[in-house]
Amino acid sequence: MFADRLIERVRSKQTPLCVGIDPFADKIPALFGDVDGDPAAVLLKFGAAIVDVAAKHAAALKPQLGLFEQFGEMGYAAARLLTEHARNAGMLVILDAKRGDIGTTAEGYARATLGAKPGFNADCVTVNAYMGKDTLAPFIALAESAGKGVAVLVRTSNPGAGDIQDLQVGGAPLWRRVGEMLAPECDRLRGACGWSGLMAVAGATYPEEAQALREAMPRALFLVPGYGAQGASADDAVAGFIAGPQGLEGGVINSSRAVTYPPAAQAATTLAEWRKAVEQAILAASGELRAACTR
Amino acid sequence: MFADRLIERVRSKQTPLCVGIDPFADKIPALFGDVDGDPAAVLLKFGAAIVDVAAKHAAALKPQLGLFEQFGEMGYAAARLLTEHARNAGMLVILDAKRGDIGTTAEGYARATLGAKPGFNADCVTVNAYMGKDTLAPFIALAESAGKGVAVLVRTSNPGAGDIQDLQVGGAPLWRRVGEMLAPECDRLRGACGWSGLMAVAGATYPEEAQALREAMPRALFLVPGYGAQGASADDAVAGFIAGPQGLEGGVINSSRAVTYPPAAQAATTLAEWRKAVEQAILAASGELRAACTR
Image (cartoon, rainbow over all chains, first blue to last red; front, side, top):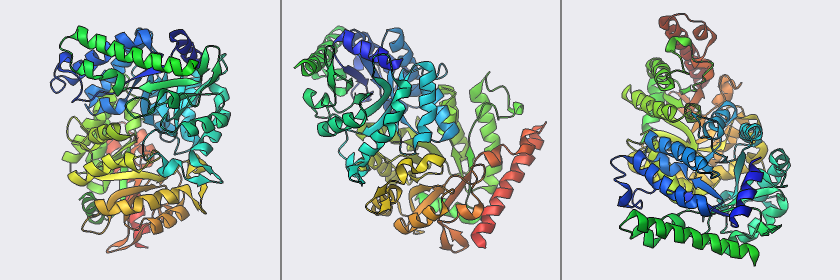
């Protein structure tokens, strides 16, 4: 099961760090080539260079599909090939696609993201539940049969997250009701470790909410965005974690910009310098999260 | 503005019919080739054949991106090329992508769908608002500057739509609160015709809800799924429309399977037979909706 594989990585790497790959045309160093010239080649080279470092030090990889799609079908293809590369390098890939649709279209998206080639064959995919439980069913069914995971948006990390998610429904915010709706489904993707691969996206920028969501979804692994560049601290990020064999555990914490575009990497003049700077940033985040989990 | 262009099509074609293209591997007739052999070529040939008929009789085209993505990057590319083909044929294209993400990623999705090449350059894109108003902003900003539209999921047509959308928030269902949240933004994409290109997705399978949503969003054009194969009647489908110069108006009504896979087309042995069968199905739906609007 995906939950077992993910928690095994977290324990063996001794950190819940998930490295996000967000390809920004104006941030990818020229060392990797001209992104306007051959975007697919540059995205792949940049992504593979991150994977080579992240595979040693992080628990998972999260490519942000929207930032690949801005480069068109070549960007889409690069994201799929990068997913394949990362899995071959031994990483678990959480594809950040935030899909959601009804019936047969949801089946299409499930195959596209979790399914084998021509799908991404990702280990887990992020989905949006606004359209209802039946729109999640095809993702959960495919995940169940293929030993994969599904990460549902519950409480996101952005400033406007509360516009809809915080609306009060019977004395509790909507995000909590979404969590309560999902909780019974967690058993379907539950691993031998006790955790479920039906993950909840729970933003690090709202630590109290993450604690409350943990009550509503005791078995769900959390995918926590917002740590690092979005402003949340390591302690905020692990607010929804609970005691495990090696300290606090309960999901993975994503960092994208802070670990893939650190100032020293942006200033690097050689790939070796870039690699060293990115490795230091990943080690710093990894260590900071390890410390927060073992305090 | 997109709203003016869309309502002009509805009036000139005298029907609010939007033809949906949902590529199912097991439904595309063998006349178009072997979808397992060269999916992109088959999807394009099938899609272009539909466009050739739909351009004459329908107000808009709605490619369902998830069903293209199931064929991988070649399917994604086929959807973009089909969008280009349909626009060259004079159609307005509402790309059904249901995207939604924060900040810079939302900008990426906006460029990917509404932006010029390598983007789809679609006329309008469907988006999911669960993550909040700030996640819609990049789509609305790009739509405003490029004269395009954005269709936000409010009340969808699927059986489980109510799981989240019907939760009661201060005495009204969530979908109505979402509509109220969007209403002030409608002015930004409002055309000379008075309608706004900030569309609301309002499922035909819930006609009473469509009427209530019209009160909450008086200016929003509706994108109405659920007519035809999903079981809603033409009268249900136009429930959210109001009196206009030629009868009821207020958006477009989508039909996908009923007009693109009618039994006579599935039984056709030549492309000419297929074309005739699809044209008859489109004319039947177009006429039924016209009648519902002018009763």
